[in-house]
Amino acid sequence: MKTKLAIADNNPIRRDGIRAILQQDNIDVNYTNNCLETLKEHLTDVDVLIWGNDLNYSIDKELIAKLKGSGNLKIIILDNDHGLQPAIRAMHAGAHAYITQSVQKEELLFAIRYVLQGKKYVDPSLTVRLFNKLSDFEDHISTLNTDLALSDKEKEVLDLMVCGYANKEIAYRLFTTKRNIEDLRQNLITKTGAKDNLSLIFYRLHKEFIQN
Image (cartoon, rainbow, N blue to C red; front, side, top):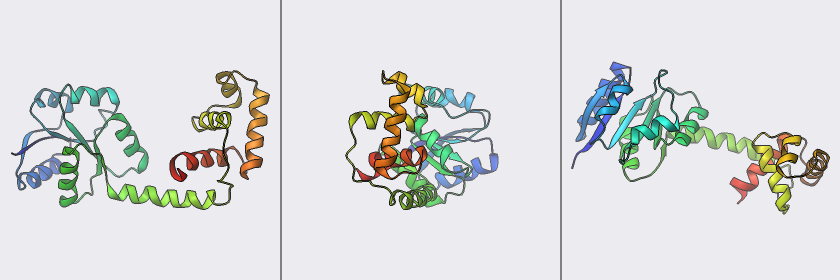
């Protein structure tokens, strides 16, 4: 059974090139258009949408939800290589895959097959970049005392710090005083060997997502 796919890309050369590649591999490219707004009306029988990121349509949860509708449409974002942040935003918004325009044919086909299995996919060049950054991050963490058992209160404070809250806002949310939060932060700096609040945030991220 053929996979039914649609392309929305305002670059006709790239769009037609992708269509030609996919049609060689028994993929039915139902519809191509450079206007995402009109494309919405033609997605009822489509399995996968390749969305060439368009400045006129920001990638957000609301728009992706509308595209998916009540069906099982898989959305692959095709973008210029702007680094990790756009990829993270797209995946958080509900995209199933994020690939850069430098993607090779076999990698594109693999991404399509992968999302059709209900899995998420990110361009390998970006995942390598992420792991390189994590490696630098680990060099810094290695200077801290990562074997400490944190109290629930300490975890709450660190989690709010990660979210960008200041001492006064943290105190309000935890029903305590600003001075208590300042003292707790200073105690954490002493216990962990951190140099400052940014190091404490790194410490918390390490404990939550890497060490565990």
